[in-house]
Image (tube, rainbow, N blue to C red; front, side):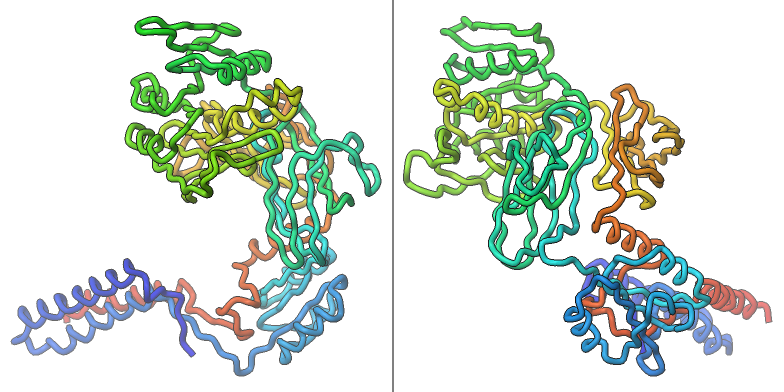
Length: 554
């Protein structure tokens, strides 16, 4: 049977088909008008239509799929339980079960791979097959095992660290990311809980977030109901200290307290507030100069100072809101944003934590906005960052002696307020030994031609769409901390054994040979597919063009 991957429902594709049909009609009309008395009209029409149909077929790229005579193999990892393996064997009843050490002797058209914990010899055997089969992979993870886990391997102090992944839980449980004094400790490791998520029975997708703390090598753990199930290591570069300007109509205790706290954290602060008509008070902490961030109220959204800051790429944080519906209209009209809220209750405030309240509103979801996971704070990127907060006063936490929670609140808010750094070196974690990885470079001027990773030198490739960004692909061959030999003494942690390593290795292997087609995909039928090779298309199109060129000369 003939198939094609052409999307017949796409608007642009349909317009292209209509344009092609119109071109064919115009082509035939011109031939009929100019050569209807030549006596060779039929031949010329045939050759032109044949060329048009050939080009259309080349664009559609048809392929042939046949279930008759096809042979499907089934390769199952040893760690896959017999019950799971049995269900898959029942589903693929016609597939032949193949042992890992017998791949070379069992040629098949399609090979369904279940699980990922295979020896390297299995990959070598598949590569050495004369006729490589179509590979289809179904990963297997035991209940309680993490999969699709990612976090930032390199980031700056104060930046938000995000841990994303999936896990299948047998029952309702709590997953925590914890900063442990001894990451190699037993099941009940002590330490500070950075974030947590409640898991329901079944498959769960989770996201944990916290501001990066400390500097240098950092180790945290993932705990499931008190039992450590994984260790996360990342490198925290030194913090880029901010210059913050408070631009206010009136001074108040909330913003003065915040300005003092920011100064104690090492940031430069300019506190600028009106005392009366034509009289402003300015307090300079730590020699503040040109601000990176402006903290103000919604009434100043249209002020030239605020607009200029956003237009040059700085950040603006709006605090002390009282009527979000009206104030967001003012902010949106002045700065081109689209913040919207929905009232959740008729109460004056809602509780965020035991000692913190917020206005009784929630943000409407926008794909181009970022919402803080723990507090009602939203960010929208224009030229600069525009951040709005629905929190009420936070200074009572300090007055009650809860300065740690106060710092946690504002450290997370600052993580969303920070403008983009001048240069960023990033790498997704986890990184595994003998599994290719990629370093990303952004806003480097100039972009270095080479990077030194441990004892290896890796070349960088500038991205075609952005000449200020580049990537460096490398293959780590040793586990442990890998030095990048830069001015910040950055390091990247390379893991050795991990259940996740098998999945990363399998995914890279299949992607390096062909596209992944899951056995749950509608496109998967267990049969082989055959396409006309590129050289055949080229030869056929050249023959059609040659016939059109030769015909008038005969």
